[in-house]
Length: 151
Image (cartoon, rainbow, N blue to C red; front, side, top):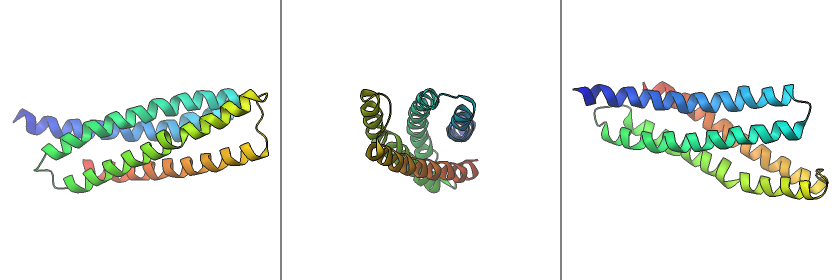
């Protein structure tokens, strides 16, 4: 009996933490940093730290949610939630762990040349940042679906 109450409650808690972290970091904290700090490099450094923490939190939430969903055979929307969790994990894997190292290389190259990106580096960084932003948006929208289905 206790397990039948515990699993759904833990599922909802993990989904809430995951979706809330995505939305808070991406759409509140990071934009606020860039709007508030005059030093865009500092804002980017802090935002990068927040996105790193959020990426690892996403991985933890996803990896904890999967076994809960697999174990809860009585949950009617189990399969759709598993698909959403997997898609969200793909987003964070590609968006953060896949693209971020390339963006870090470009930032390091800029730092080595006096902290300014030349035209080619800036264009490449902008393209990678745009792709990462679209993937983050996709993950955020998938989180909306997960919140609605996981309850």
